[in-house]
Image 1 (tube, rainbow, N blue to C red):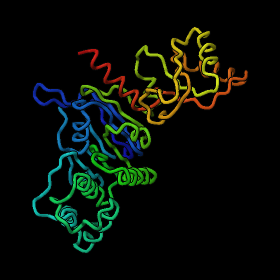
Image 2 (image 1 turned 180 degrees about the vertical axis):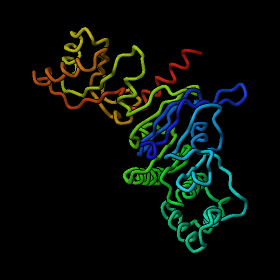
Image 3 (image 1 turned 60 degrees about the vertical axis):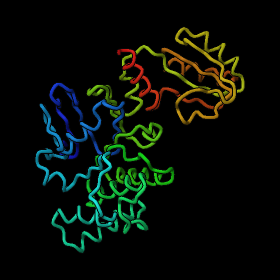
Image 4 (image 1 turned 90 degrees about the vertical axis):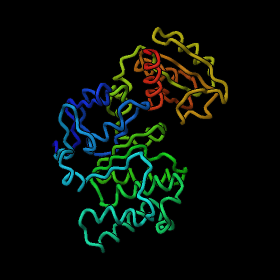
Length: 327
């Protein structure tokens, strides 16, 4: 089973007195796993550990059964796109990918074929013979991704891969990740584009201060965070005043706030434009959902319900808020 997973077992990495990551234990299955956390939380260190660019101070790492200390074996099936924007001088996009592939000892004809395919997958065919130094930021990001996927890896480690991409290219890149995930590959990405993390992730790993705060599907992650905040629901209905008054009759409801048209004020992108409606905060989400069903059957015309906390952005916001509170 471990031969189809990325395993980190009690892994720590210290840079002198500075903590990189501490006591990290993860078992990452195939699919898209997003690392989420503020700058300095340990996301890049974790990626560098998985790819063997840094060694753990303690603990064990296995990538599909191979230790990162065996780079010649590891990079036969691992592709890594770092966040660092540096390239050899004078190379075109095509030469950049071709030179990388030749390092593996592949025949020149195969390298040319793989180069063309990788550049096509990131939509840079027309710019392939231009020097990378003349590329825009988004194009440089895409050529790094092309290098990572050029040898058809089973594992992709991608540090901020959506950074600097325009909306159309971003959508195409997300579609590429989803296709790879459907083929049973591992895609590990870090990102601050949180509504996209929501869209693409099969699972998320929340990091803070070098520690894993929570992991799993976002619904499970939200429940893992041991805070006392009520769960939030946004409800659009034709009788918001009546719904608010009925909700307030429940002991577990701590707030029922009317939301006029266009004044939702919540971070989740999918809530934009909702209203009029009611924002409900409850200590017992299951009980509230049962009550809501009864209210709908009793004649309150409910047009839509969104669990406003059930997304990466709200969990991430909580994580940042918790850190600020502790400073």
